[in-house]
Structure formats: structure tokens, C-alpha cells
Length: 289
Length: 325
Image (tube, rainbow over all chains, first blue to last red; front, side, top):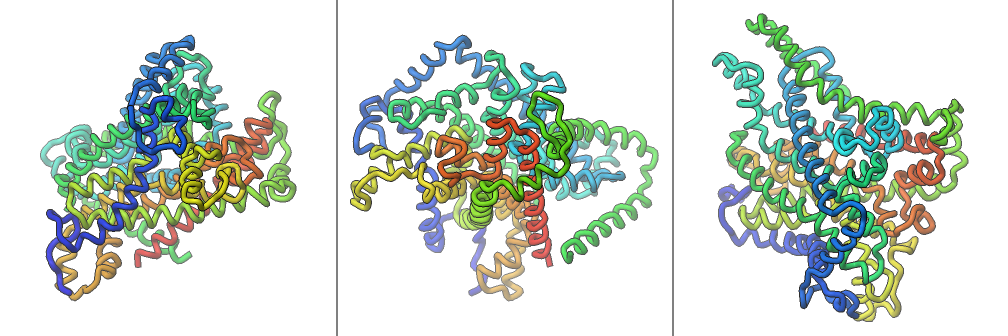
């Protein structure tokens, strides 16, 4: 068998690809099935939730579950919109701060040379294995000592340093030739210009990936609201939803739980779809070929 | 040991070249300004990193040598917590450790190889269908704790109304509903299934983009040079060309596996899980830390877990660098 044209990233369908579809399609269906269940259940009216045997798809979709979810919310002292506002603010700030931290430190660790640099990156690489839930107790003590209890920033600051973000950016910047930076220097570009005009555009895929990671960790974060914050008006949407769905085994609450799960899930999906096209496009034009 | 030697030599090589480069660098005037700039950009990350990652780990190590109930000042008890953990804690030795090992040794490698194989197959089909299929495969990893709970509890629900039970009842495979999530027999396998389901995350995406970014001329050249099979293609071109993504993917698998430590409690609805069937180290930490308020002992378990993850990380780095040839 000799080389028969481009097979990785092909432009068109070819019968030789059928075998891949035959494997990939069933796996994709298995993966997405529980998610479809979440969508259909969220829109099921009450009688369909209690129906036996349970049907996978919804016959008469309704918004009842969402309405009762928000009715429950309005019953508490803080309106649902406040939790949502908090979550959006927390998420935006976390994403921006972690991108800035990772890109700036990643650039320095990749392209500058100083004592201790190897050591810092080595420690960061070990910290990739860091599992935050293993040290919730000491983290709580630190948040207390910093005076961040019942402070809005307690939602944001503990999750901003992402070893994975720094790792990823550094790996990407390593692939950029030093000569490119030297050339920019010769053209008279200052350090900041090099970072923001030369490096940043080239590591867009990495930035997009950090954005996805930071978004997920901030949007779904319940740790801060559970342990660090007592003031209801400073807690996040994810925390509030988690208080409903912690008692979700009966069919009656299934619909509301699915509706709340869907509200938590959908932004992740949308952000990913936006970022994914960004990642793919940037990959195609990034010139790392 | 061998891999360490390789690492060290490659580091030396890097240093050697950078030193050489520095000597030739005529730009010495800008050095001071440049190092101020470097510190300015590196410090913010370091500050966050030290406060919220290094200090908590150090605190956990410190507390692990004490008796601490969160009210009074911790008193130093030496190695007592560790000795108790390893000799007196029957649950830890008989349930927690075997469960954690089973869970980690299946979830980690399976999710790692699955992400590579799926990414590789996705790279063989045209862009539109690839984008759709990879979105479907990636989407479960977007489900955080609460979502996982809602979806899978309904599927494995113990009454006849649970999706799996009603399906099996209709088929006639079983005559009465099974308490999937309360059974010590099924809980751990279900946890493994759910964790693998949700593990095609960023590591998987990194591998996909890694494969797609490999220069197609490399393949052409290799086929001209006599390469014959797809296996050779993977072995000699694909894998060596995507080292950073492979390492990243491995790291993500390990992290995902240990971060999913709460899954047993989420599915069964109780900590400890029924008969400790699905209890992992993370649950044991919470059991002692937040339920019994034995913070010193809980910290000792945390330290044990961190050491375990560190050892695994060492093994993985060794495996990946021995791959380098």
C-alpha cells in the first residue's frame, strides 16, 4: 500500500472512512444520550414524568418545570436574578484574571531566562496534579485568615491560579521560534508590544482553552458559596441550584432537577461551541505547520 | 532512574544552548529593564499560586501532625495520625484503598486511551462531521457535579420507574427492580462508567488538535521512505509529533480521575456510601473533616492522597519520557 493522498484532516468523504463512522457514531450516541434525557425531562409535563414505563422523549413539551423552579426561587429572601448576576460576574472576572495570569507567566517562563525558572515550572507541573477538594480544610483556614469570609472576592480569587492554564500556554509559546521575537525586537517592539501583539495572537488556541476551563470551574463552582460565604446575596447560581437537586430521587422533583441541570449545562455548551470554532479557525491559521 | 537521566541531560542541553545564546546576545543594555518586566508579569501568578495552592498543601502537611477539632488550638501529636491511618483504620485499608485503586486504575488509563483513539479516528473524517461528532463526545465533560447527579440518578434509579430498571423489566431480564446505586456490587462499576463517560474533556480536545496540526508532509515523506501501515504511521509520525498534547492528556486523565472522587456520594446520596462500596479517599477526608471534625486526621488523609497522586505523576512522566527514545 502506498500513500494515497491526505488522510488526516481529509477534505471530503471517502468510502474508506466508513469504518470510522461505524465506530464513532454508536459511541457518540451513547455519550449524548444522558444529555438528551436532561433536555427532554426538563420539558416534560407532570403526567409524563410519572408515566410508566418512562418514555425517553417528551410528547407535550412545557415550561412548567422552569416556572416551578423560578417560583421556588422567588420564595426565598434573595431573587433568582441576584444569584444569576453574581454567577455571571464571578465567571467573567475569573476568566479574565486567569487568562491574564497564565499568559503573562507562561510567556516569561517560556522565553525569558533567569535563575529558578526551571524550578518554578517544575513545581507548576507537579501542581497540575493538584486536586483542590483534597485540601478544602486548609483552604478554608486561609480564606478566613485573609478576611475573605463573606466577601464577594472569595468566589473568585481561590480559583484564579490554574496550573493547567500556565502549563498549556507555556507549551504553546515554546513552539514559537525565538527568532520571531528577536525579529520583533530588532523592529523596535517593546516587551509589552511583543507580548500583546506577537505572542497573544499566536497562542489564541491556548487562550480559548483556558477560557473554557476557567469558565467551567467558575460557573459550576459551589465550594466558595458553601464554605466561604454565609450572605445569601453573595452566593452563586450553581450553589442555589445544587440546593434543589440534592434531594432528587422521586419522579416529582425530577423535572425541576433536570430543568436546573439544564440551566447549569447550557452556558457551558454554548461557550464551548463559540470557543470551539475559534480554536479550529485559529489552529488552521496559526502557522504552526 | 533512566528517565531521570534523560530529563537531566535534556535540561542541561537547554541550559547550554541558552547560555551560548546569551553570550552572543548584544542586547545587554535592556537586561535590567527586561528582568523588571519579567518579575512584573510573573509575580501575579506566583502570588495566587502560592496563597491558594502551595500554602494549603503546606498547611495540610502541618495539620496532619496535630490533633485539631477546628475550635481549640491544634496540639502536636507527631506521627500518630499516620500510624492510626495505616494500622487502625479498618475502613481505610479494607474499603477505601481498594476502591480508590480499582477506580483510578480503570478510569485513568481507559479515559486516556479512549481520548487518543477517538481523537485519532475523528481526525480521519471531514471537518463538518468531525466537528459534530467531537461536540457530542465532548459534551458530557461539560456536566459538573449537580448535572451528573440529576442525569444518572434517574437512569439508575432503584424503583421500577428508573430507565434501566424499566428497560430490563420490559425485556424480562430481571423480574424486580434492582437498587443499582445502593448495592455494593454495582455502585463502583457504575461510578467508573459515569466517570469515563464524562472524561472526554480538554485532554481529548488537546489530542484532537494535536493530531490535526501534524504537518501532512511528514506522512508523505514517511510513505515515500517505505512506511507501510497505519500502525507504523501512528507509531512513528503521529505519536512523536504530539508529545505536548499526549502529556497534557495524561495529566488531565489523572486529575479528572481524582477530582471525580465525589461521584459515589453524588450517586448514592450518602457519605459514607452504602457498605463503603463506593467510598474513595476524597469521601474519607470529608467524612473525618466535616462530619467528625477530626481535622488533623483528615489532613493526614489529604497528605496521603497528594503523595499518591504525586507518585502516579512520576510514573506517568517516566512512561512518557521512556517513549521518547
